[in-house]
Image (tube, helix red, strand yellow):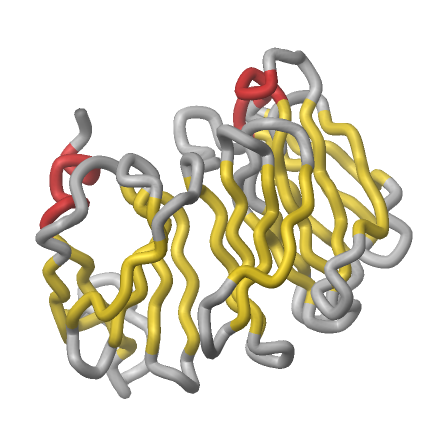
Length: 224
C-alpha cells in the first residue's frame, strides 16, 4: 500500500493558492494548507471527487465503501452519505444544470442525480469499469471512460453523453481502458488517458476524430 493510500481514510486536505503568484526555484511554496476534513467512517480507497463551488460542497467517491460522501466545505464535515453505488469511481458536478454524475465500475453505470435533493434522476450504461468523467463546458458533453481489463476485453471505451438531456450522443473505442479526459479550455482538443498503454489519445473536440497518440509520456505516472 502506498503512503497516499494509507492516508486516504484519515481525511482530505484542502489547499489554496497564496496571493504571491506561482512558486519559483528557491522561493517559498505557493500552496498553503487551509483545512483538514476528517472522514472517520470511510475506510479504503477514495477515487475521484468533484466540487460544487457555489454550494460549498465536495462529493467523494468512496470506492471501497460503495458510497458517495457529501462534504460541507464550510462546516468541514460529511453531511450526507449516498449508498448503493457499485464501486463508484468517476464523479462530476455540472453547476449549470445542477446535476451530479457518478460512474460505477462494477455495473458500468452512469447515474444522474439532482444537485439539490441528491435523488437519482436517471441511469445509463457503458461497458464495465466505468471510471473518470470528463466535461466540455462549451458543448455540454460528458465523457465517461470504461472498458479494458475491467470489462474483460482488450479495448476500452469512451462514451459521450449530453449533460443537458442525459442522452448518449457518441462512443469511441480506445486501445485499452479509457481513463480521465481533459478538454482544452480555449483550444480544440480533447486529451484521453489510456494508462494500460501508457498513452494519451488526442482527439478533435468537435468531431472526436483522432489527432495523435502520445506514448511513453506517462509511464509509471498515469492515473485512471
